[in-house]
Amino acid sequence: MNYSNANVRRQDRLLDEATALQLLKTAEYGVLSMSCNDNGAYGLPINYAWDGVKSIYLHCAPEGRKLKCIEENNKVSFCIVGKTNVMPDKFSTEYESIILECLAYKQLPSEERMQALVLLLEKYSPNDKEKGVKYAENSFSRTEIIRLDIINWSGKCKRMINT
Figure 1 (cartoon, rainbow, N blue to C red):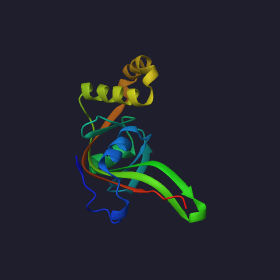
Figure 2: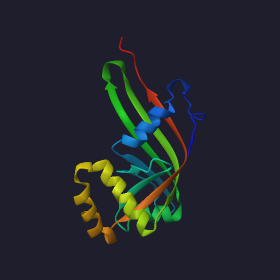
Figure 3: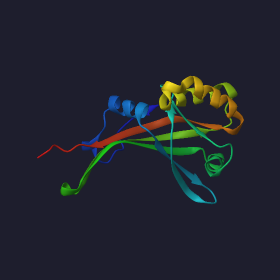
């Protein structure tokens, strides 16, 4: 998991790695972007959980367009946007974001799939984890898990000083 801002065009807007890690850990959702052979590009917003090491987990139905795209080409991009602030009078926007280049994998072992669901529950339903685990167990056969292994990532932000 290589964090490098070397290829960010606006070097004056770099997001430091500590802030980028916090954003990766806590952001509400990301946008998964893929390249599909027959249908062109495909991107969608989706909830995720980071394992704290090098992988992001997504959950979905066991069939659909994103799984077909990943089967055709497992090189994907995942974009996470944190805080934003549109400033109409300044014709600008404050923001923070990270872009992750990843390899996507599906059809994971059952143990890894269940652990991914637990990570998602800990992030999105921490007060209902016990109930959530039972729900996950009951719907396990109808749930696919995608693992995104982060290869490279970078972060960018724009913060304006109030004038």
